[in-house]
Length: 225
Image (cartoon, rainbow, N blue to C red):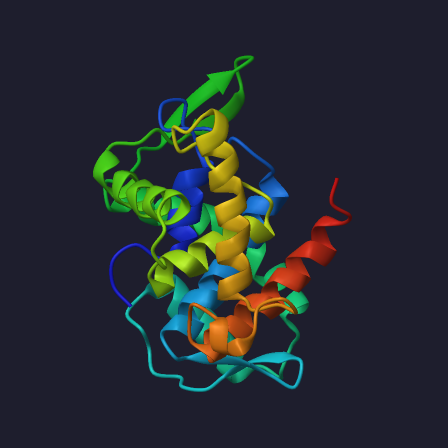
């Protein structure tokens, strides 16, 4: 695994570039980032969904510090369900990912004081090229007719699970088409009753992890409106 992880991509999409503040549900984003780390490990062939649990299939480090810490925890622990892992992993994950993105110069940490003593941190973008690449991939996947690459399909599936569609500069019919496309990509990435394993847009082993994590997030977030 190299470059920006799925959890980092999700965080960048979930923060306003200029204000540096989260734009949606904090719990949804935290659950999504926890799931994204697990999906990244599945994409790298390190974990799988087996007998109702997320299990390590290969403990070889990936090169990503956050993912490797999670992989080590999974390998050393007894099997846990996807619901258990996303709850275990979400605590403190946001701060670690923000710190990592700051260290790489993607965003900056603006520490402001309110009411004379309350510290408030904002994280405006310093290097927009990283998020631009992410948004271009998503825009192409959501508005195009082609099948998205495996990584983009996985990101779209996590986005659908946490019920967030980032602002992609689309309006009217294009925005509605994008919403429908996001749902379709998610179905194909984590195959469901109306999408067969043969029709899945990604490897079955990864799709099983995504489907299990999506169910876990859906249960954690409660009934859809």
